[in-house]
Image (cartoon, rainbow over all chains, first blue to last red; front, side, top):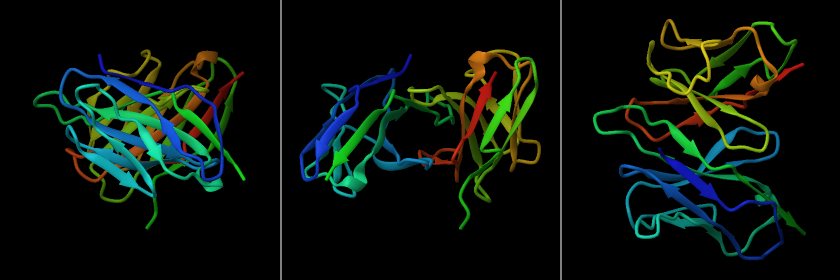
Length: 116
Length: 114
């Protein structure tokens, strides 16, 4: 079945440091890939997405590129801020042929703490 | 506009009790999903509705779990005879179309079974 494996945390960085959170996936079809973020006390929010190979999703300075050859979707940010402290989830959606269920399969999440 | 809301936000149940968790999706959203998030884990799919039709319930862990969406808007997830392993955050998400990647999540209901 479909699965997502992401880098285990916690990750602690200083402000303005470079961030990478690794994510790899297994899917039988042609999935779309997502990064969701959960800020303290808030619900899950979509951060960025990519729907086909070589697409780059970007938002709020975060980027991730859909790499089919390595089945990866690593999240990067060049300079993190304290406000980026949150839990980050990599996810995929792989509706089967003829299906309409776009359910998400999530990784376990990576806690990021950014210190001033 | 209003987002997805869930109630109650916190629920404590004694083992063996029945609970009902409510989800109010964004108005007009066709698709509705329930997920279960155990402590330290990512959310896991439970069930999916397209309007009032429950099209996929493959993620429901046992027959003690039951979900409904009778009028195609509000949904209720019911857990009968709760067990300690049911303790988790239950997340609801809605989507504006039936073929859509966009899922908008509610804040979740944290269920603790004692």
